[in-house]
Every structure is written in C-alpha cells, then in structure tokens.
Image 1: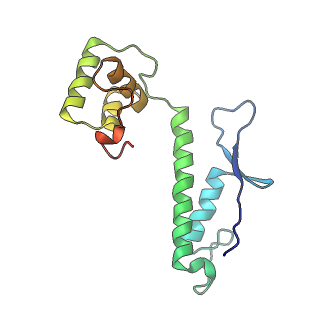
Image 2: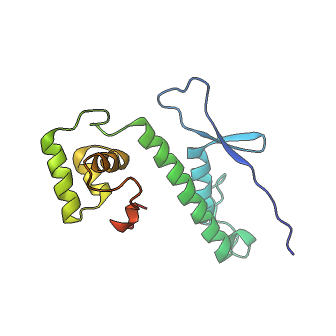
Length: 155
C-alpha cells in the first residue's frame, strides 16, 4: 500500500475585495496568485525552468509523460479558476432585468429547436441559471429536469 499525502489548498480573498483583485492560492502557509501559479505550471509543462527559462533535463522525473500530463491537468484547473473569477466580475448584461413577452417567446422557441442552454444564455445576455429558471417558470421544463438531456456540454 502506497502512503497517501494530503494537500490542503484553500482560496483566500481580502476582507474588502478590490475590483481587479485575483484570488490567491494557499498551500500550507504560503500564498500565490493564480496568475503566477499558471506561469510556473505552464513553464514546467513545457519543459522549461520557470526561474531561468532554460530547458529542463530530458531524463528528470518531471519530464516523464504522466508528470507532464499532471502539469497540463493542473494548468487546466488553474485556468478554470481564473475564468470563474473573471466571469464573477462581469455578469451578463441582462442580469436582473425583467423578461419581455418577446424574450419569453424566443427562449421557448430556442428550447423547442434544441438550441443548447449555453447558446440561449449567450443570445439573451443572461446566465444559464436564469434561462433554466425562466423555462421552469414558464412551465416548459420541470425544476428537476437534468440539463444534460438537452446538451451534454451543459451538465
């Protein structure tokens, strides 16, 4: 049986967040901005020393295929966190606005045609959650309808 290690990662925000502040990743007692972590992980995934820019030795453990895949996976997770932060700062343009009868009719027609929720939300400048909530209110879908039955990308 292999020993397991536990990595405790938590995101920290300032008590009064600034508009352009990014989240910080804390591992143990040290903190790092997501952007800096991304820069380092991308360099390592590309086989480059993040401090010097020199190519890493080809026979080192961090050049093994599973390790490189893990670096790329970590980069993807960090990019997801970064995008999530960015999207929180800029909500869709119609967030909080009332729906018009024409908007209701259009969203129902798009659902009938099989347009995916992401595209419907983009068309109406609203979140996917608001599209689903509106369709539930209009009785076009049930509150427990699985979203993946409409488009697997949404689930």
